[in-house]
Amino acid sequence: MRKKRILLGVDADALPMTTEFFSNRGKFNVTEVHDGHEALRCIMEEKPDLAILDVNLPKKRGDECCEAVKLGNLAPATVVALMACVHNSDDIKRCLHVNCDALLVKPLAYERLSGIITRLLFSERRGTPRFQVRLPIRCGILHQDLADSSMVNLSTGGLFIEAERMMPIGTPLQMVFTLPGDDATITCTGEVTWVNRPEQRCQPLLPAGMGLKFLDIGDREVGAIQRFLYSEERVNWT
Image (cartoon, rainbow, N blue to C red):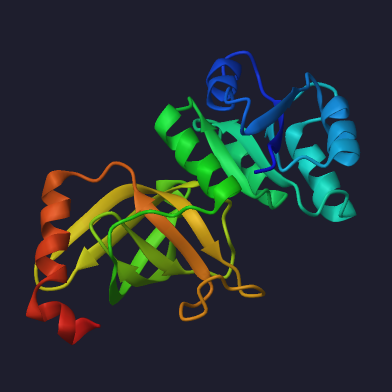
């Protein structure tokens, strides 16, 4: 199997974990860069499989590099993942504005980093079986900016929502929805694990939208979802 070419333009805090993940020399060939100008040049010349860039790279920001790559079609096969602090909403908005392929939020957790990169490079998606469900849901990056959407399927591990605007893989979203019958309101955080783009649906039986996995759902909420999914009430709401 051909080695995956990886470009890393990350800060000193994120470098140890990312280099540890790509330490398998049999699978990855890693190039490290230290500023945005160097990152953009390497993307154009080497066309890596994956470029991970901090949004605040010196000389040229990571989001500016991503925008140049995407708008200029400089490396169509290169997946660009931007990295931003979860507490800096302005940086996250800049990442979303340039249509990056994935968003890695700091502080990094190895399990989440591994899951996102594995999906990006090897197209692996794992999760619990989901049931067809039609329910209203409100979601957004910040609690004060939640927007109305529609849930298409649901499991104790995550859900799929219809969406016109796709978020990058790895984007954390706040979600609020109410289960019928049990009348339980679920408030939790989810992470975008895959997208079903309207122009190229990888799941043609589903509408355009995003699959999310739950990140911080409690035992009480999981129990409520289980009761709903395996009840007669669900059949009447599907």
